[in-house]
Image 1 (cartoon, rainbow, N blue to C red):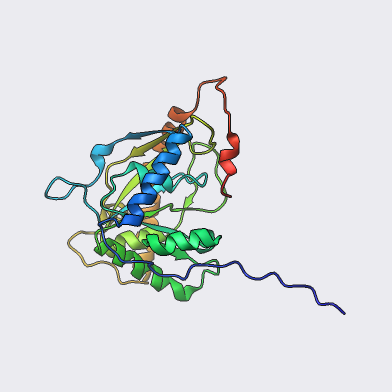
Image 2: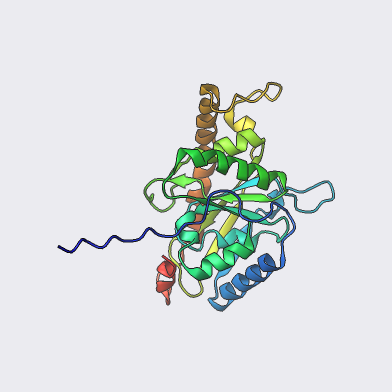
Length: 271
């Protein structure tokens, strides 16, 4: 009797920070960033950035790192590439993403192995890896990087609305006293030739203020009920702050009625 053939598990990148935690971009990072800029130009994607003045600056007046870029809403594969090519090249970004998506092909694994600056999330959601995620995020922030993630979770929401926010961004922001800078996207729900994508940079948000913490008091003990309650307050305050912007940016980015939409296959190109 023939046994049913078992499907081998999909490859995954190992948890933890891949590459060194440093703000200065390497050659691979700069080359790939240039390639995506050229690809966006070839597809005639028009990237419009509002609120650049809200990006954190250092004492020297140059773009500073050690903050969290919260990209919302997450709609298509293009979302992580928008801040990557629209924000300043230095400090470089560290990406939090799906371990299987990152390892889906030999080419992706080859590129990411040389790119570095990625923190994969395993599909198993093993609690033992949570500490690795938080330590990797801490190392990236302390290295002067911008920690970039898409904090929404759960099923897709209606256009112009955000989904529920996952707790990870709250724990990372509170434990590292890192500011959260929301990057609100519009026009990323359907891609085609000539599509305009809008990214609005909102002012930095203090994690302690969002969580209702006393700045003169010590942080809640890691893993405590007090910390969980602080994270819940932070998520609620962040959602309240971002939700109206998501609705308005979506409205602003809608194409005029009757616009031609050639090449809509781009929406699902890398699914």
